[in-house]
Amino acid sequence: MPVAAEPNEPAAWAGGILTIDLSALAANYRTLRDRVGPAVTCAAAVKADAYGLGAARVVPVLHRAGCRTFFVAHLAEGAAIRPLLGPDSTVLVLNGAMPGTEGALHAAGLVPVLNSLEQIARWRTLAHQAGTTLPAALQIDSGMSRFGLSEDDVDTLLAEDAPLAGIAPRLVMSHLACADEPAHPANHAQRTVFQRLRARLPSLPASLAASSGLFLGPDWHFDMVRPGAALYGINPTPGLSNPMQPVVRLQARIIQTRRIGPGTAVGYGAGFIADRPSHIATLGVGYGDGFPRAIGGHGHAVLPDRPDILLPIVGRISMDCLAVDLTALGDSPPAAGTALDLIGPHHPLEDAATAAGTIGYELLTGLGTRYHRRYRDDTSPQDTSPQGENG
Ligand SMILES: *Cc1c(COP(=O)(O)O)cnc(C)c1O
Image (cartoon, rainbow, N blue to C red; front, side, top):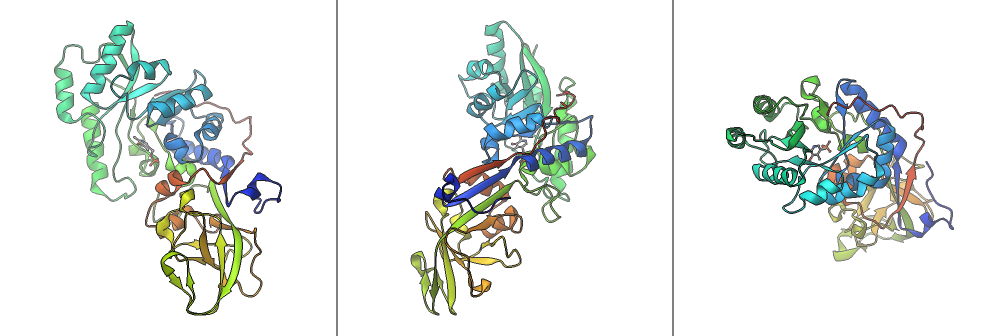
C-alpha cells in the first residue's frame, strides 16, 4: 500500500490520507456470507454513508460480491444509494417512514422497516390510496426498547380485522443489544421473545443478528443476517482476535519537527510537558478531521518503517494538527511530508478507538471529509454470483 504521495498528487495537498481497501471489504463480505452458509441471506448495513467510508463506493463493491439486501437508517440515505442498484436488490430503511414521507419512500423504490403500530397504519393508508400492495419489513422489540412492536402492540395489531391489509410483509426482524458480550443473558432472553412474537405473526423470513450476533452461532442466524461493522473491519468479537480484514488506514503527514528540552510545553493548555530532551512532530490531522480530541495524551502513531515502535500522541489535539513524540525513533527522525499511521496495519482501529475512550463504530463514522481519500479496489469482476434471495 503506498505511504507517501508525490508532491504533485492531490494526496500531498491534504494533511491526512484515508485509504479504504475495497478488496478487503469484499473479502469481509465473503467471510461473513460463508460463515452463515448458503441457506442464510447475508445483507449489509450501509447506513451513515457506509460507516463513514462512502456508500457510493461501498455499495457497488458489495453488490459485486453478491449482496442483494442493503439496510440504511434514513429515507435520504436510501434515496442516495437506490440508483446504484438494479431491480435485483432491496434497500430497507431501518427507521421506517417519518409522517408524510411514505409516498416519497415508496416512490424512491425503498422498503420501510415498520417499527410501530402508527407506522403500520400509515403504510397501510398509502397502500389503500395507491390501490396496491406495498412491501415492508416488520420489526419486533425483543428487549432493546428502541424500535419495533412490543408484545402489547402485537396483541393490538392482531385484534384488528385485517391488520396487514395492503401490506406485503417480507421480513420480520429484531436487534440484539448485547451481542458483543456472548455470555450476556440478554442475548437468549431477546431470542426467546423474538421467537415467541414472530410465531404470532404471519410466517415470514426472520432476521435477528448483526455483526456480533452472527458470531454467536447458527442459532442466531435465522434467514438473514445484517452485518455492518464487521464488513468495515471492526472486530465483531471484542476481546478475541479480529476475524475480519482491516479496511481502513488513516495517515497523517508530518508538517514540521522540533527538538525540545525538559520542561518545555507542547500544545494548547500546556497539556504536555517534556521530562527529557524530546523530538516532537506536528502532524496535519486534528479534531476538525473528526480525529477525536479525547485521544490527546492517550493514542499513538506508527512510522510504517518502524512498526515495532508506538509513538505517543502528546498534549491536546488541535483543530488542524496534533503532536507526536518521535524521541523513541532516535537520531534520524522522519522528514516533513512523511506519513505516519494513526490507524493502520500495525495500529488497529480498535486501539485508536480505545485510546479515545470510544468504539470503532464512532471513530469510523466520525471521520471527516478533509482527508484525501484513496480507494483501493482489486475486486475481481467475475465474482458476481448473487445469493439466493430469501428475504
Ligand atoms: C446498525 C444496525 C445493524 C448493523 O450492525 P453492526 O453491529 O454494525 O453489524 C443491523 N441491524 C440494525 C437494526 C442496525 O441498526
